[in-house]
Length: 246
Image (cartoon, rainbow, N blue to C red; front, side, top):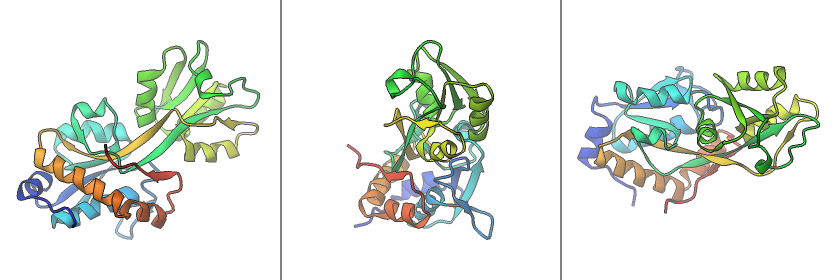
């Protein structure tokens, strides 16, 4: 039986009569293009549309160029749900569902690098290029103790910094690094992952009915194959359906 929202959930999620869905445009796996009308298209916009349909309201997309800006806007009352990586720093103000899909994050090293494993990265003298406030960068902020993390404002800029300053490591999502490694002679991607970005759906803390509905909807979307079908439909290779909560 499909999860049905309560009247309170509808009121909390669509107080204007429209579900305003914040979309992170920088994640090329979750947003793969634009519709003829100019709206973002891909796995995350389609998840937002499915939620709006279940609520019985139209959806309006609120695009953000970077995830940090999307998270910051929770206090501006410009979006009702945000589709973004769930991280502890963001969860201070945003109530997240369990993940609906996840993306592995790992490291790329240049030709001739002595670094062979993930465990060898966090050592004194190692310099890591990263994209500021990406979900994996927030993980680096919490976990890297000895290496130095140098941050840029975009994925492309992080790669350019890695190359121009001859840094030791480039951090990123595995699907993007698979593209980068093809154009950097001799570069290698380390086996495994240092974390998986948990793509979830958030709303303002305190909206209990909304949070309960969203949590149940996400579990339904994973169990019924909706998430898997969207990944297949948009060719989002590198995304995987997240495990069931709990």
